[in-house]
Structures are given as structure tokens and as C-alpha cells.
Image (cartoon, rainbow, N blue to C red; front, top):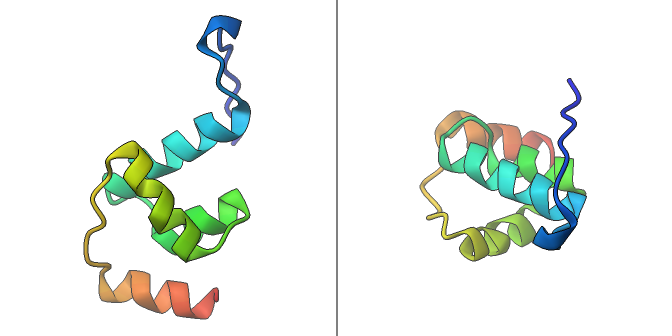
Length: 74
């Protein structure tokens, strides 16, 4: 799926920031693991976890399934 969205120039945000905000929210909602979100952004899991603070997303304990997925995708 591809999402297309118009963002007014006066907001002064780029596509990457919108993508990061969306992935941070999906992580917060429990819809995506930190490892998968990091891969979609092209960064390490640790970098993603550090960026979550910018969006005031609390890092919760990963489920066993998420930990296994992160290990498999490391």
C-alpha cells in the first residue's frame, strides 16, 4: 500500500518526518514492532527507540513475538 498526502509548505516538515511520526504512532498502538519500524526507516532498532522520545512515545516491553522477530531481522 502506498499513502499519498499533501502537506502545506508552511508546516515545514518533510516526508521522512511524516513517516517517522506514523511509525512511532503505530508502535505506540502495538501495531508494529520496533525492529520492523526501524527497517522501514532504514535505521537501527536502537536509533528508532531513541527517536521515540521526540514523539513522546513510551517504550514498552516487547512481547516475546516481537523480540523473536527483532532477533530474526537483526
